[in-house]
Length: 329
Image 1 (tube, rainbow, N blue to C red):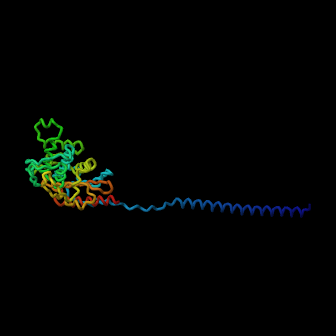
Image 2 (cartoon, one colour):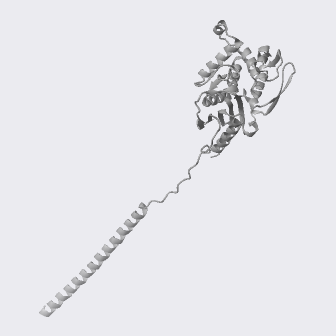
Image 3 (cartoon, rainbow, N blue to C red):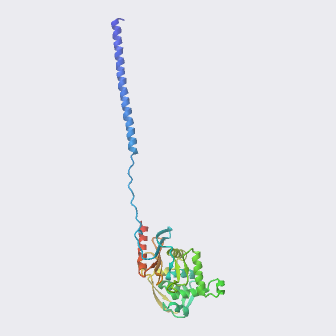
């Protein structure tokens, strides 16, 4: 091979090497560029996924009881089904009960005597308060007399019931102590209060009528009375049925007719009313305890103690309205 051919061959080889190097350089550059783009996309995805999406805050529900005010010294609203306190104000304060006492009178009497038992209105019963025009020696079926007594809050009726029911008590030891049947009955009321865990409640008489300007006929807390009422509607569901009516007529066994109007003037304004009991004396002020159905088999009890004569009805209506609104939420 001549020198010229050798040189030409060397030049060609060098040109091919240079061309190959250029191609390799371009490929390398493209590779680096692709890696950069790929990594950037990864970073972009990671960055994008790392951004939190704002969560829309849920509106805060305000309890309907938030701004409820009552005139009563004490009040308590209890959802019996959910075992939830809906409203409470001085619920453990011990206050005079007035005729709300008759809720315990009704419960204890119903446990001692049967509905058909005939009760005679004695002279001592008529002398208690003379409040309902009973006739001496008039005869009533127990259930009729109890319904009438609860509806019109008769002190005479409560005394007559306690006199008979106390004589049915099996506690002979008390009889030997010389206690009257009424006192035996009142002792039974207090024993029942203890057994039901009503720690702030005790009873001096069966009606709740004030003993004096300083001493009431019975004492208890709003929480205790709510517990008592809840116990009655579950364990003696028909016991207070009459108290859900505005008016009822009664006929004694001697054919005397009595037109009874519920002392709870708010009875028509409470939907689903199951039971109610009023109470009022100078010492106690205005009291009211009710149970009402806020839904199918969803009883709620509400109690106000120490309000005014008319204020107790306004207080209860406020608490009922708030309860129903709470259930709607």
